Amino acid sequence: MKIFISHKMPADTPAVTDFGNRLALYAGNAIEISHAGKFDKGADFRTAIEEEILSSDMFILYYTSDSYDWSFCIFECGIFKAHMAEDTKRKLIVLRGHESRVPESLSNLNSVTATAADLASMIREIYLEEPWRVKPDLGDGDIADLAGRLVAIFERSRPSIVNFDLVPNFVIELDGSSETERSLITGLIPERAVVAGSQGWQALFGKVPDTGAWIWRELVEDWDHRSLYEFEIAAMIVEALARNTPKGCYLRRPNSPLIFRLSLRRFERTLDSEVQRFYFTAAPMDVESYWLPEDTQDKSETKLFHLVNVSWFVRRRLIEMYYEKMLNLLSQSKRDDAQLDKLVKDVYHELIVIEIQSVIRGIDNPRVVLQALDKFKVQVHSKSPDEAIDSSWNERKKLVFDCMTSTTTKDYHAVAQALYALALENGEYYRISAAAYAAEAQLLPDVGAA
Image (cartoon, rainbow, N blue to C red; front, side, top):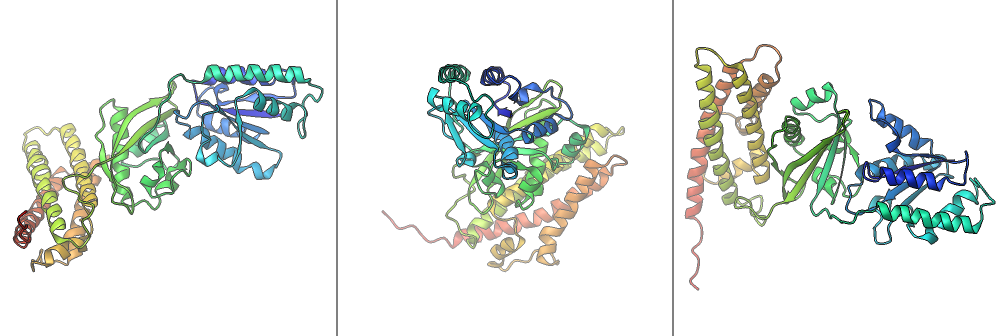
């Protein structure tokens, strides 16, 4: 018989080792105890763990505290659970303290409370009953003594301080390969990355809450505005790996008015740098000055307000700051490519931030913008609406991205020209939307006296 014990590493590894050794005390060679703490972390670490889990007859989740992040242990549970139908003799048990709650995704499975009575029952199942019967002549006294010792080991391993997650949070686990690094630099999370968390974090990606861990590829395949948010998350990870403080970003939950501030609070890596985990927090935002939840999609005053704000931001940041800095760098007699590379990267990040702001404010759809302006019979360019608002922006953003990611010759002058063209278009939108917003303000009804 083989028993795999999933646990919080490395905090509970010593206790789990002691627990496993004691559980197999009377079995001789009949019981093999395995857990992830026994393996050296290397390139095949995860594969080795999966093989151990799949070859086990019993899986015990050593659940010592509600305050821990159990995402990866639950991921291990999922591997075992997915193959239980192949062998109905297999058993998955959650071992917990009497006041702990079984994780929602495992609530339909066996739960054993760390009491002498419950553990004695588990011992009998292993030693005396079919299908294992590893020592059918084990006496009641030995069972009671063994149960008492297992309870003592479990209680010693439990934390004396309890923490509670209050906001949605998730952890992205990556390997430390050069391939992963290259992917992150281009704004992409590796497709096989494992993502887990708590507090209904899956809803941030448009998934059903409390559905356990996900593979990144499947998590984001239908995610609204994936390209924007994935770039921001990857950029935060790149900054963290350089030991810089990452900038967070706003995130709007799909099909919801809820807005969150997403930030990367810390990361950890194994000593051999084979595994890296990045801890993100999504704090819900109170009503911001630019966002009024009760406003409807057809309220032109609100849309014009947002359009004025975004176009003003583009003018002050993208044009007056980054465009002017690029012109200065390009006019130098000796070109500083390192400074230009950093500036192009900053420009692309700013373009992403502007798009995210448009999404949050509800003006990312060209039709919505045009409906707000149409009330005042204004024309924007001689092009069609979609081409004027959407296509030119995407084309210039791609040009900046290509320059940022190019490993050969970089056309910095083309980036400067793209910013100049955006400045002209943005200036037109700024003037038109400001005038329309001012006209809208004149239509507001008077407020009656108290």
